[in-house]
Length: 371
Ligand code: MG
Image (cartoon, rainbow, N blue to C red):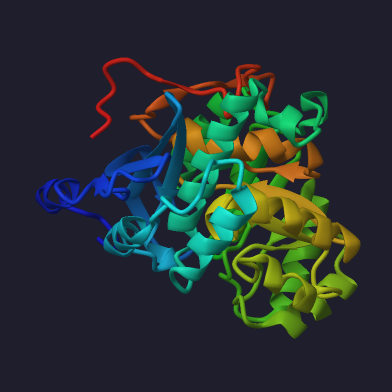
């Protein structure tokens, strides 16, 4: 199965964990280790199914406090655990005086490698957690945001047999206010009808580039509108920007870019071709660039969604602290894994809420293997 790492291989990788400030001259100490996230249920999207996601946990220590960070490395993004480890080993924070030099540190990290946005995000998240702890404030306050404005999170009902989907949907409606269905296979209408047979909650659909023809996509969007769907994500292949523009112009529903947008620099070229963009910390190199991306995207007239990969409550908390600026939220990643390493995000009436503790507000779950 694509992207699954056997336990043997993983043990070898664990031996590759390390510390980046070997000289001892830096005031900040960066440590990191791989950790395999285990999915509660196999996760089906248009192109594949998988049961685990490789990840990398990061700890950044300064003056007795530890900031936590995380890289989630789902195989379809093409960023391997080996690549991420190699990048983190290159990081030398000894020239920097304190974690408050966020802009300088992250610019330095960004220049160490092309791409590798998840590895970069792990450092960004750890620095923000650390700075929040040093300031004694939760990150939503540091960013000037109000948790009352956090929208409900979508919860994804994975592709499955109708009976299984009905059961999963029945469980989900007890906890969530908006659901997401992954389309782009050959049973799209059947799947939507199956979910609709048990709930009239608002639905979103994510096609993950799965539709081949723009007219078919537009016909589907019209049909989905009749079914109470409120937005459609990434109907066509990521590089077909103009055809997405053709759909968006004619669509009765907002069309969101996900695979078509990675970083800040991608936003301008999408203007007019989508209604909104899905910002994920693992694509944007973390919270700082995500924050800049929100500003540019809003200036371009885009609506904002925050999404996630399979992540522990560490990276999910980072997204949740920024999420009061979002119009839509899809931050269910920590709810899909069986071995979360942290607690600190609470699901309350369908909304993922941050804690009031400083930084990310997360604490390690006792006895959970940290690698
Ligand atoms: Mg998506």
